[in-house]
Length: 446
Image (cartoon, rainbow, N blue to C red; front, side, top):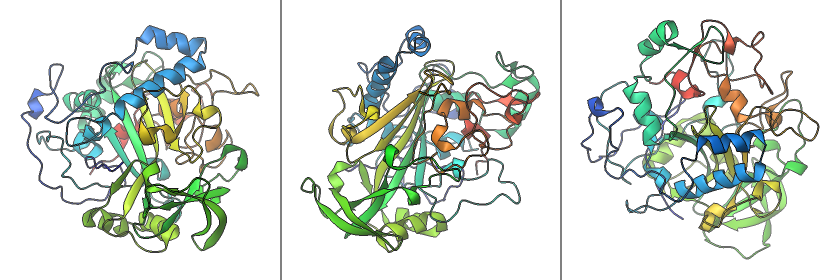
C-alpha cells in the first residue's frame, strides 16, 4: 500500500521547503468553535465508534473490561486508516503536521494534498525536554524516523486558544484555570472530546536490496536495567522491497550494522503501509546523523530517492475521556499470535491487520499479574528507556508519562508507575501549568 501524507514536524525537526499547496479558505481568525477544516481534510467517518460515549468508556475503565477497551480502539484505528476520496490519502494522512499546528505565523491552513515534502525527526522522547546544557543526545543507532499529526479538533483547539504561543502559556501559568486534580497547578483549556493526536514511527527500506529490521517478541526480550533498545532485540526480519509478496516461511541470512542475523524471516514490501521517498526526503534523513545511521545499519548505504519508509509503529490518543484514551500499535510478521492481537475487528483492511496493539484507559487498572500498576508501552519508542528506580520502559504506561506533561517537569524521564508522586516529582510542583497530557505544547517549536 503506497501512500504519502502531509509533512509532520517534531522537536528535533529537519527543515525543507514545502511543495506548493492549494490555499484553503480558512483564515486564522476563523478558527474556533464554528471553524471548518480546509478542503481535502477528513475525520474518522461514522460507524467506527468515535467519539464514543464518555460514560461507557469510563465503565470499561473501572470494571475493567479489557476486551471492550481493545475493541473500541481497534474500531478507531480502522476508521483512521480508511481510504478517502482525496487522491487515495487515508483519513489520518489528511491531518495536520506539528509544523502546521505550532507555526508562529498566522498563515492560512493549506488544503490537504499529496504534494508535500515529508519531514522526519527523532522522537521527542529520545532527547531532553528542555534541551539543557550537558544533556546527552541520543546514542547513535538509537533513533527511528518519526512524525506527529493532529486531527482538526486538536489543531483548532491549539490554534484558537493560542497554545502555540509561549507568552500565552506564560500567562496561563499565572492566570489560567486551577487544575481540578493537582493542587496549586493551573491548566490549559481542556481539549474537546473528538481530539486525536498521532505519533507515527517509520523504518527506512532500500529499493534495491533486502533491509534488516528488528522485530519485537516480548518473550524473547526480557527487561534489562539498562533498557532494551532495538539493536538488542533477539530477532530481525528482512524486508525485500523488490517483491510485494514473498513465499511464506522464506528465510535468509541478513546483516544489521555488521552483525549477521542467520535464518531471518523475509517479508515483502506489500506487508506494510509505506511511502516512497523523494530526493528531498532522502536528503533530509541523510543530513541528520542519527537518522542516517538507521539506514546505514539496515542496508549498508545512505537513503536515496525512491527508497521507502515503512510504518512500524504508532501512538494514538483520543480525548474521549478526561485522561485521554491511550493506544499503541506496532507491526509484526506474526500478527495473529498473542494477546496483543486480541479483539481485532473485521473492519481492518489489508496491511492494517499486521499491527499488534496495547491500550491504557487508567494508570493502574487492570493490574498486572504481579499486582503492579497497568503497563502499556510501544517497543519502538519506550523499550529503550533504562530503569532509573521506578522501572524501565518495558513497565511504562502512556497515560502515566503524559499525565506528567507540565511546565514543572524536569524532563520526560524517569519512568513512574501508578498514581502520581505529588511530593517527589517536579511535574506536579506548585505553580506548574498542566498542558492536558500533551508534551508537544511544551516543546520548543522553531
